Length: 318
Image 1 (cartoon, one colour):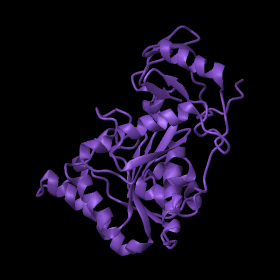
Image 2 (cartoon, one colour; image 1 turned 45 degrees about the vertical axis):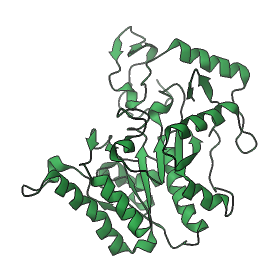
Image 3 (cartoon, rainbow, N blue to C red; image 1 turned 120 degrees about the horizontal axis):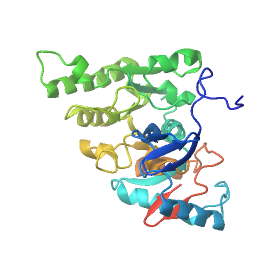
């Protein structure tokens, strides 16, 4: 009998004994091609010797130091590396332990931004149907997957959902792909006018939708219009790149393909390739300075954030 509370109580999954490159091996000797990299995580393969060496080297130095009292060279180096890869207006990284934490951080940071600049009436998010942003309550609240939300609906904060950019399902026979993209992008403006722009914190979206509409990209010009609407009505653009970021689209950030820059972006998964839990929330100077020049304290934090990082050559992992 297993005492682990597994994801499904009616099924005991195979026990993995080891891994080698792209394969997982169970206790019966069966090999599994890890074609999905778990949940789009293991992009460096399993048991890479140089990564394991880096982990051991860090363990021999120090495994943990609480960020309420200390910083560390590896976490500082990781933040610097991420900022080097980011657009020039993004200069600050908040390091956490996974994708849901990164999105919770993004949502709370966005809310505190408006508190710090004297607009506490902003308490509403707009997101998209058929989206997924994590399983913690805040992240689940801005997700558009009805099945995942249903059992916890009474606990979730109110979020307005607009259409995804899903031309295969929704493009009209009388409109071009560009016209379709502009039409669904303009749903954001309509929702803002309905809710009142000065009550809205921000808009949340995945540049490439993953868990609820596999590898779904937006039509050309869609995100440019979204960015313009956010600017026009002065709301924050929050992008979830937990699954699609860290190089999965050929560039480090998926939003680079759209020629836009978000105010806040969350990354995880491929950031450490499954060798240790990690996520990061990256923010623009505008967001950071609201707190730095205000209270000075982001009312947030986790026990294991920015701790236990290790350096692997020129790549910084956790």
